[in-house]
Length: 139
Image 1 (cartoon, rainbow, N blue to C red):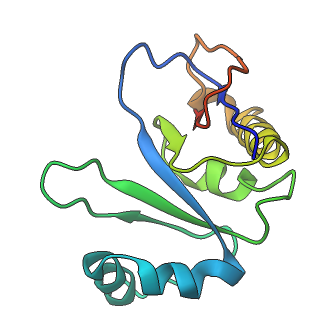
Image 2: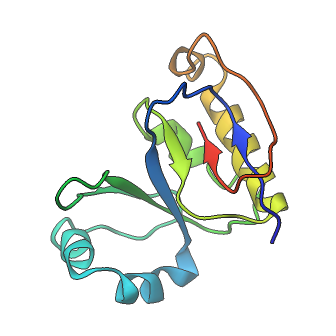
């Protein structure tokens, strides 16, 4: 698996919310392996693992809360477009490495979804694009 990173904005040392991307078909096995608090949260909130759905997962203790995003296919060039328009403004980073092609699709879909008449206000004035060899996608 290639290790790649796409920085849509310069975080300047500020933390980002981890974004866990799970394909819909893999959700049942992911849920089974998830911590009990996560499973209970998703059941109690009646989370439906439809493609494009997401949930903020509570953090225990001092951990950073995370976002779970369910997608149809991580290989799609539009993989994060629905999630990017639904999430509130903020800084997000992929919680796990993706292949080079998946990271490219994630970066492209995020950038296109957050740009334009409805999304441009969400993009900070200062942003940069980079492609170093780190496995996280920060936006």
